Length: 74
Image 1 (cartoon, rainbow, N blue to C red):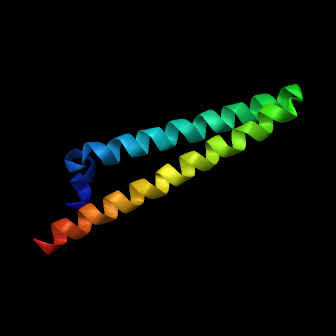
Image 2 (image 1 turned 120 degrees about the vertical axis):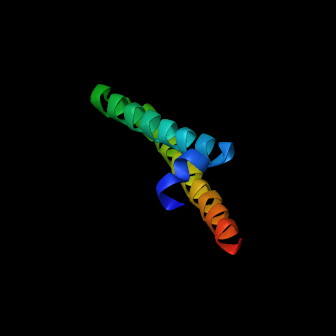
């Protein structure tokens, strides 16, 4: 089951994973651009974006853990 988890993963899990990766990447890009141009406001604004991405990542871990537990009980 663990080898084929992505193929059998729920849509909610896949959305959480891709949203988390996208937000973290966007936050990193904003941070690099903000620091490169000396725009402190943009660099600081990127931190909540990265934080939201990390929270979504943790939510994805919870969804995955629940799915695995549910399948192991069967």
